[in-house]
Amino acid sequence: MKEKGTFPGLKHTILKTIFARRITLGAFAAVALIVMPIAGISWFNPLFYAPLAWFLITFPFQYLVKRQNSESAIHWIHASYFIVEAVVITLFVYLTGGSQWIGNAFYIFTVIYANFFLPEVQGYLVTGLVVALYALVVMLEYVGILPHRFLFPGMGMAHTSLSYNLTTILVGTATIYGVLTYTVRSFTNIYQSKNKALSKQREKLSDLSLKLVSVQNEERQHIAHELHDNLGQSLAAVKLQLASLRDEIEGSHFREITAIVDQAIAQTRTLAYSLRPPLLDDLGLAPSVRRLARMVEAGTNLTVTTDLEDGFRLNSDIESLIFYVIREALTNVERHAQAHQAIVSLYRRDDSVIATVEDDGIGIPARKPLGLGLRGVEERVDLVGGSMKIASSPGQGTTITVEVPDDACARGNRG
Image 1 (cartoon, rainbow, N blue to C red):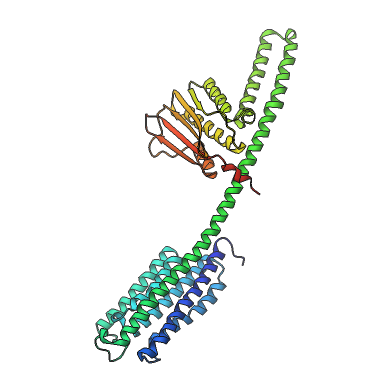
Image 2 (image 1 turned 180 degrees about the horizontal axis):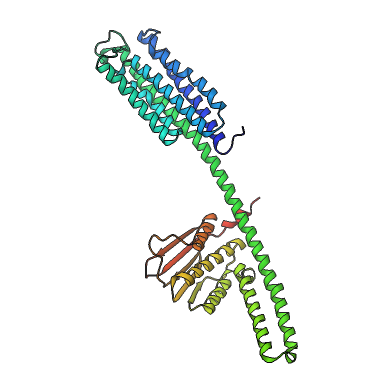
């Protein structure tokens, strides 16, 4: 069965953590080997063989993980391992003194791993099982059902025993927290590499999206020129031909035909301008925005005032983006703001281009989600590393401010 989606990455990560488990348990066993002869502890003491058993159960777990072909199955295998691990740790805790020693600290790795990898419910269940198992050992010892086991037989007051103190320092402190540090760093390194890979994928996606926007702009430019230069000229030629036939067509009928042709010419020019104004290529952004403002005023009751910085040209894609932003903002004012006046500003500051559209309308109601037009603006601006801010309150109008790096779209043309 072919592995799909995020499952291969999950399996690979779990297999890497199995290796990390073996390193931590191997380090624990190694420290135990050093401590036991120094402290005069018997080789049959659980301080050594319990972690060894814990180490050995990782091998069948690894085998089962490799054989799984679905995320659900691997989670259940993982949860089953945690249950077995918790039981082994509970036996270890009991044999090493129960609540008298630091045994409850040994569950920490199981809880970390379980809640890091398992689904939320399974993680909570493993944590609950750990608490229940430890509490069971402590309470069974307390009521006398289980006999208490001393880690160091014959030991009276723990703090007076050199062997107990050495073991507590080397195993209970140095090893536990050294291993915990290694475990956390292993997780950190694993997910840092994952985040780097994800960041690279996002960068590739961003570059691809920018190239797509650039291609769309080129296509819009081509269609706009076709409409303006070809279809518009053809309609103008039809109008000229009609003029030569004026004496042969009845007056009112001629005026009706001419009006239809004039309307078709106007609609063609408007459509071409909405796709990409020819002025944008010929004269730049500021003249195109002024022309847009006049068109909005001519077709609506809205007064549009412009405050535009002249004398600079930008990357073609950036000019298209900013023109699109201003056009969508004015369309939003026209359709929804119930405004009488709008002010369009455009200027450069440092390495950015800033465009604002301010109106005196009814404002955007609180908590109302953005419409499709403004969401489209926000997404396209965010795509090139820019930002969009909306300042609005009911009855006080709305100000939309967009800031775009002046070289933002250039990176979309790499490679």
